[in-house]
Image 1: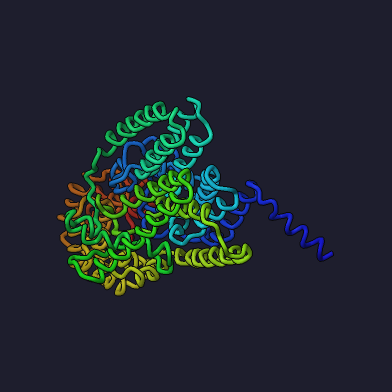
Image 2 (image 1 turned 60 degrees about the vertical axis):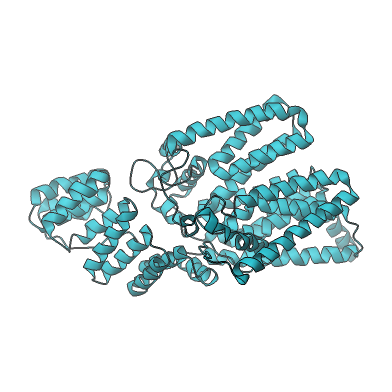
Length: 580
């Protein structure tokens, strides 16, 4: 009976077919990332989803192509990126769950696992089934990619990779004009998911030039057409270079100043790939001067790493010239992906784990070429044991990371220990403490965030804390400072709520009506707060008109009690309903 069981178990793995490999990727992906499905919204999820009414209706899909990704209270979505496909997926997830985070996590995990499966089929054109599975499994469970599976605001990463990798797979397997058109459409979808989709266009054309030169010109022509379509859509929506400035520390530096950080930036990705222990969603460190620990040591480490890759290239060339072009192909994949990360063009963080989602494939591909060529002298069972231990350790770290994304407070309080220079994480903690009602700690964290870098959201959090601590003058000052960074509907809403209890009533009414409501005429909260302010100060006729405007814009239970109180002439209690 025991022999029969052993025989059956062996048959389950041998022969190791393509179908089995794909199935194992799916099963392992579900097992490792399962608990992440039950996390909430964190970080930028709040502004992109929770406080973004645009994605909360499928009827708004056409508008996604005429703006960016952040809702600031106006008719057009704002921001410095153009990702309409991302917003479409957000709207679809919101439709499925009515505002619950679960559908977002579920769809994102499906895409993340699908990316690993598609990568397996892409790699199978170059390597055998077992090696392709191993490399794809590393891609799936590696902790440096885990943020792309857990953080809803990063759904753009799995989306652009999903469409881009399918397009490459089509180019690998088909040569017909229909295939070229289909792959080009998917490349356009990749670009519309995230600008980094341009990398898949470059990789696809490079692959075609090396392996399928007969269809290079038609593919190049299709690529030019899709770039023109993308350019027209983007320029008509937000322009080539949008007016919304980046708020990162490194974006404030000149190119010459950013050169000081480049060795440390490259070293960050190498170190995190090799030893992915410390992970965070926000890094804002910069170095202002050249010294050994932050410049020369990372530079030496980078050169050693690149030297190892070069040596592997020479070794591959010595053993198999045919394999050299494949090694160089994946080397090019790694190089173009990494060049976007070292801040030649300033980005919204200094570094980010999720940005390595594309270039890591280049490293894995080069590793695959080396493994394919080198003649291993180790025992096969030992190799299998080492591989299992490696995958298990990476999977465990990724599994544990899922618990960090439980909520805003958990992720911010954990990641700030890894990335103490991040004003964004300090700000997340300020917001999390405010939600808990701990306004003293919220104020402290907001002040820490402002000390690192003043931003609109940190001033808002400071204003909220000061309001509930009774420092109304400080709150007003904080909100007005927030407006120096641009008009934002939440700032005006919180100011209007503050003005119910602080300041000159007539001046406050005038400010809300002639400034705030001029900018955001469809903001029901502004109409609600000005109606309360008018009613409290004896302007009952105006209050009646304005509360009707608020109720017409949002006939909800939130407004109904105030609506009935004003219309019936009863006593109205003062309250705060601030966005935190």
